[in-house]
Image (cartoon, rainbow, N blue to C red; front, side, top):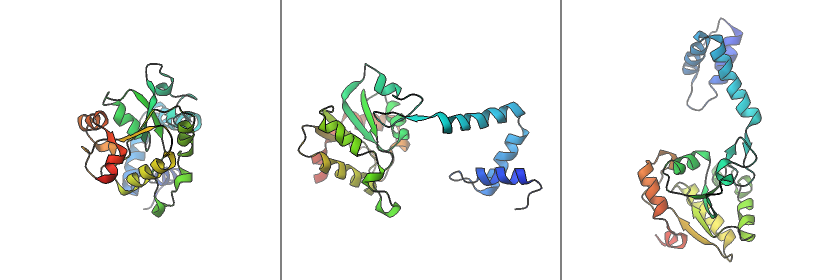
Length: 205
């Protein structure tokens, strides 16, 4: 692809690094931004810059936040001894949209996947185990997608906390095997939270 401007080429190359965006789509998006009033494009660039430089991770649950403690963890009306374990912020958003869960979350930041070089040490697992050791959690709900990686991660955490006084449950399998939470409709996801089952039972199925 030949460019008449090095500035345009650089913008297209950067845009094409986004997931699912090829060079042609990147060019269309960049030209769209170029046609917009200058202040619109500058506001767009500033929003991205601010997000990258100022965004924080909640010191308690590791959720993406604007402050040291996210709004969910800081909410006194949440049930603070029931914790739902999820992969990332997309799962938090999906579950919150159901209005069916009033506890807190723990965001792992991914799933165990040896093929991708992701082991337990790359995830926020140790801080979760520490919370359990300190007796801060009464029930742990595993809400990772029903994939091989999700099940492996659930089982690894389960083995790490055996022997501690904590109830473990997992979301009901109204969600198809292989599905990610963010693509599950709100009704199904909400029911899977409400109708959660003991984790030990899921190991036998």
